[in-house]
Image (cartoon, rainbow, N blue to C red; front, top):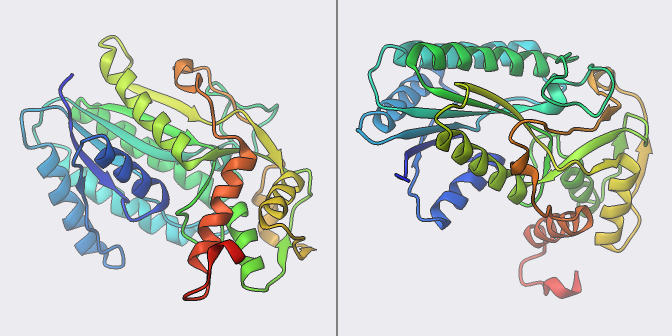
Length: 316
C-alpha cells in the first residue's frame, strides 16, 4: 500500500499532537500546518497553502483535521468564527485538482448526542446537540461533507467519545481526569455541577489514535466503501463521575476536595453518554487500555510536570 502524503491540522493540540507522534513513530513524516489561529486571514492563508501542498503530488493524500476551538460552555460566537474560517479554507481549495485523497474530521460524540434518547448511542442514533458546541460540530461535519462531494474525496467523520490521557491542554476547562488532578496539585477544590451518576465513555488517547489510523486504512483499502463514513470512536467502557473520582483518588493516593454545586452550563450536559459502534466494528476489536491504568498514567504525567524543580518524582 502506498503511504499517503499526510497533513495534520491541529498538531499542537491533544489529539492532533498524539496523531502526529504516532505517524512519525510508524515512519510517516506528516506535514504539520503552522497556523496563527488568532489571525483569521493569516490562518486561512496558512491552511490553504498546506492543503494545496499535501494534495499537489500524484500520490494519495490524507488530511486529518484534529483542530477545534471551545468547550461545551463556550458561546456560539466562537464557533461561528471557526465555521467561517473552515468555510474560507474549503471554498479556496474546492476547485483545486488533485489525486485521490481521504479527509478525517475529528468530531465529538458527546456533543452531538448530548440530547439524544436511549443510550448507548450508535451511528444510527439521531444527533440532538444541546450546546452551541454540538451544533457547531454538526455544522462543520456538513461543511466537510460538501467539500468531499465536490472534490471527489473520501471523508471519515470520527465522532470521538471522551478523550483522556497525558498531553491534554490543561488550560482548557475540560477533561475531568486531568482537571481533577490539576486542581488537587494546585491545592484547589474541584467543582462538580452534574450528578455523580453522570456517565461518559472514556477513551484513552493512544487507543483513539490507533482507531483513527485503523479506520482510515480500512476505508482506503475498500474500493466499494461509501464516500462518506461516519464512525463513533469509543471504548464501550462507561464510567460515572463517581468512578472517575475514585480512580483519580486511587492514582494520587489521597482524597480529593470535591464541591458539588450548580452552573448554567450543566443544562448542556447529557447525563448518560454511553456509546457503541456498528460501523467498521473490527476497529473496536482490540484490547483497550483499562480505565484505572489510563487514569494512573494521566495522573503521573501531570504530577511529573508539576513537580518542583529537583524533586524526586518517587517521593511526590
